[in-house]
Image (cartoon, rainbow, N blue to C red):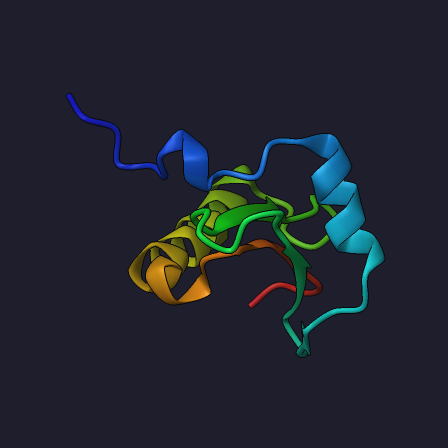
Length: 95
């Protein structure tokens, strides 16, 4: 059975890059979430995404997973136009 998740090259798993993106100013700061962006060394690389959904914001794991699935799907649909950057989405409060 094929996985429905994001392919490994589109996942931001490097802790150093993750922290570097979070230390920058948010590109978008909304009521529900902040979006951070960090440029990659090569603009032709595929966009990568990292998600932060804290337990203090969404208590139940089911709800945290639903939020992450929705963000990943939105990213998957628009990843071609976001290439060349590492993106981190941090949830600020529950939807």
